[in-house]
Length: 222
Image (cartoon, rainbow, N blue to C red; front, side, top):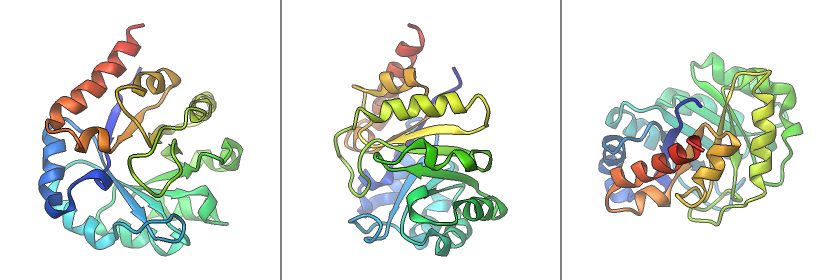
């Protein structure tokens, strides 16, 4: 099993001291910083823009994993790339020109990701898997943090793991990830675990991240 990557989501951080929040999870052993971008249109919430990404870029050496939950993502990939994103993930449901958009992300020097909502089938992205560095499975309906994990998404992960045998991409999961289910997700084959409230709601962020890793390792030993 390759190293599992823990990507705390800043959606659950205290925005009044965002720089310090990011530093705390980096010091605590996080691998990536996950940035949830919402436009109030594709999803019913409004969060971070490129200016915020630009402001946090100097704060951390960790990769910034920017998840664009936006309509017309074609308008936004270049601003986020220029702001300092390392990974840019777009929703398959949000664009009619997914092939072109994924190529553009790579041309901008970023890793390209594609995300699927809980109701979307893996078949929606099979034709572009050679163009992606990761596939992000939404295990909650996007728009808000702190939602309950949708268990049926585990089967979607298992389908993607089978497709990894023919393509080179990471499987990432976002939504409701905690110590209670991260072992199951690791067993299914997830590579990158987005964890929001389970990390940022903890007083000891290092321990929260260690607890998540401990469950992954426990599963790996079975």
